[in-house]
Amino acid sequence: SQTIHQWPATLVQPVGSPLSLECTVEGTSNPNLYWYRQAAGRGLQLLFYSVGIGQISSEVPQNLSASRPQDRQFILSSKKLLLSDSGFYLCAWSVSVAIEAFFGQGTRLTVV
Amino acid sequence: RKEVEQDPGPFNVPEGATVAFNCTYSNSASQSFFWYRQDCRKEPKLLMSVYSSGNEDGRFTAQLNRASQYISLLIRDSKLSDSATYLCVVTRNDYKLSFGAGTTVTVRA
Image 1 (cartoon, each protein chain N blue to C red):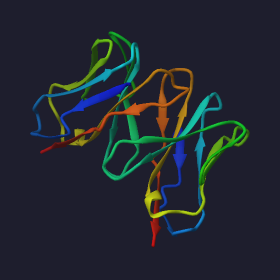
Image 2 (cartoon, one colour):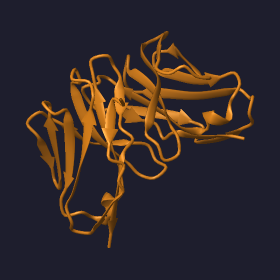
Image 3 (cartoon, rainbow over the protein chains, first blue to last red):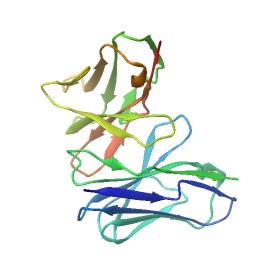
Image 4 (cartoon, one colour):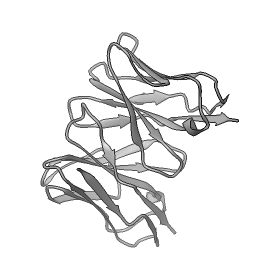
């Protein structure tokens, strides 16, 4: 069966520090991978998506970047965090947009 | 205009009541439609897909109106456990899943 792992669950980082969030998927090949951010009380904002190794599409200009070094690994990074980067970060995968997307348990990031 | 818009609610209903709400989408090329459920501080999970002919899953009924570009969700015989935020999701053929901001439902005893 397929599983998605996302870590850490909670993170408190100072302004200006770097960030690296990792997401891995098991049990499937060539998944579509997504990073979303959800601010408190708000909807999910698509940050990046990838349809294959090394292929990254960015949805909004921001302080973040993403990489897909392996087929089932998706990494979200920042060189210098801003206060506005705080939020609930969710990784997701799907084999097709026509069927279900599965989410990791999320990382709650607080920038202080 | 946002790609997917939802009434944020909250819808505050007693147990056993029926509650219904809509979601509108702006892109007529949208192809697939879903309702996800998100519990407080948890990840979203698929509730049901929405098919052109409408579909039902137990107490939940979803409808799609392509002409008016909206989908709806109806919950019958509400349970306390139905309290959650319901997210409307719309996709095209470009791999993107676009989420609405969610409709909050609170079922009270």
